[in-house]
Length: 490
Figure 1 (cartoon, rainbow, N blue to C red):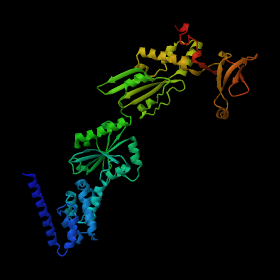
Figure 2: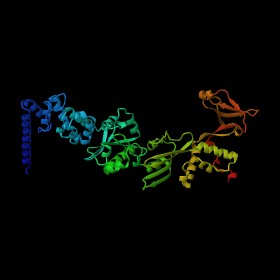
Figure 3: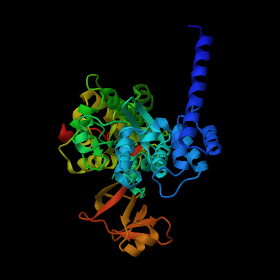
Figure 4: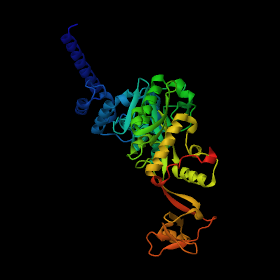
């Protein structure tokens, strides 16, 4: 059929319908032509679809105790027409159950079953309540993400407490109460998902469901750890949502969750190229079947290693500066893509102290064996990598080590730099924990004289086999054979 002819026919039908309804309403309510004409001009349908209902209420034939004005009626009907898409059976049924006085007689059932038909409403206040609810559900992209929608279901991720209250209206969810503590508590630990649907669904009717909340903890994102709550805030069996909701809906939640986990650092693409560049990579394990990766490495010294913090967002660990503090060499294990972090260290003070003591006491353990005692993840490393780390520790000691080793004071010599703890807490708080300085001479009576840093008066102590002192060692001053086993050990 010619498009112009179709348009002409539709226009003619519309005009006939418009005039026919206008005349019918005027005939039903005679002597009110001016009011009815005014209402007709404000009818948002364009064909007087709402005219009879508006005239009925304006002339006092509704069931409201107070007759609303024509202006109030036309404003409400225009809002009803504008929000038609957000008015549905589940929403209206909730409103009817909570406000039965606004829907007297048969209107309660009619509004519950057919809320989009304005003739289902017999009161101005009843329609107003439904319209206000629909307006509350008006989308606001700034306060929520709509991640799924079909003819039956909508899935919302509330981004603000106000949004949680809006979409959780008529539920008993603590995150939708006026106290924002619960919303903040849940969203700091994970994500909330609200599943809303427009019509009663088989399987859910037993619990009177019209909306469901799901909470997923970032630390436990697998489906068996998801928490599902009905609108009464009763925990639901995890099998029920799988049986009722379409797979695409569940998948939309998983997709949104995975995106959030990656944004927050709970899932990450670990860059092996970056690790090779910035670390001493000791081991790489990949299992494509389980999508797991494992990396063990030592961050390189003398560089800013704060780049590692991106892998530690969900852990208690934090890398400050280059990660080498107090003569500890960091050894880190990353397991992806959920970025589990293991952070251990090689205690270089312990290694040097034991090696020094082994020279004194003729310990049966070799320096290499003593080193292995403080090497983390050694069961996961090959012998070749263990030797590689040992060489790294030896190099670190030679170039960077500056620490103290406890030893018998009678083994000390003039020129040694020593320290010992101050006797009283008051002195420790006021002057620092240790007195320290260089042994400058020995008296005829056998006392060592120490030039104490920061003090004008030297101090002295008598060396004794049973008295231990902390002697300062610098790696650059250690003998060349420091890492060699004693002859008795070989």
